[in-house]
Image (cartoon, rainbow, N blue to C red; front, side):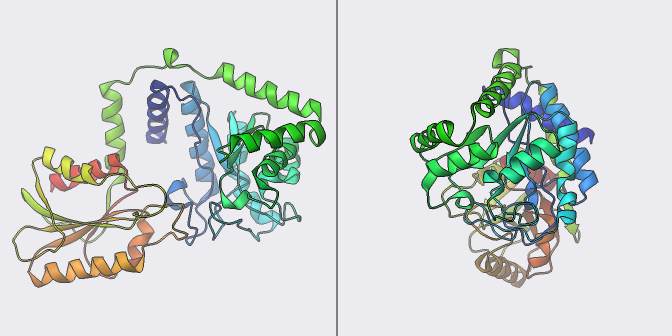
Length: 389
């Protein structure tokens, strides 16, 4: 847990340095469903007690720096098989089963978490109406506020997401969320429409004492949060600690990575292209290899040669994918690259930037080095690992 505390502390310091004093972390969802298209690597694990302990450590470290923490997505997004960015998922679990999902959130409340984010997910066992949790008084008010005793801020997940849209439009959704007990609305596509919905709710469906209580919570935590002037400086030792944590996350999943030498070929298979938001640049992998003294040549059609071939396969959780695994096109490309490299008698192995369990989908038997995602820091950690070989 020490590494987790260090990572959370660095997250807080880096965010505060650029003026951000509220982070939507930690993710308290359990990694219970392998086909879940939107949780996966975002989760801290599948064991509720382990995740609860990790959530507690993160909250303590984040808020110890003056950063508001946020446990999400209440009451748990780990059992869904569809993506709430696109549709309203329905979790057909019993109330007893959902008690497991609540474990990390109970721990977060006990740890004094500043805020909790709702899920755009329906839970018939908690609210037979089928309303998403964000708009459900039974879940937001009766369960979270009254039964669990949470007194901090409740914020919606993004209102642009399909899982919370309804026929009444965004203003109606905003009013429903407020009436359910949410204090703050995240990312409406039309702030004007959301504001109109709040004005209607304030006048008709939400009592004055509830609005006053929400405003008081907001003001309390706004005063509590650190300002950039109070943020602690980021030291070189902090950066070194962060790099060491990331390096430990990179591990061999199967096989043995051969000695690479000073020259390698790199073929990138990027399953994260497409959708409304571009993935991180993949150039940091090549740049970091160069800084480490490894001459990396980007190859699109590997042919004959003595240098080893590294296939960099990127497959992060992305909201627009609607799936957790690799596309058939990405897997076909990996198969083609391995076949071509082996025909040329080249050493070949794969660096996977995604959940370790996705290695089971690979159609080839090659050594696999695994990082947890495709962010710049992970790319640089993989480069350091390769250079060490």
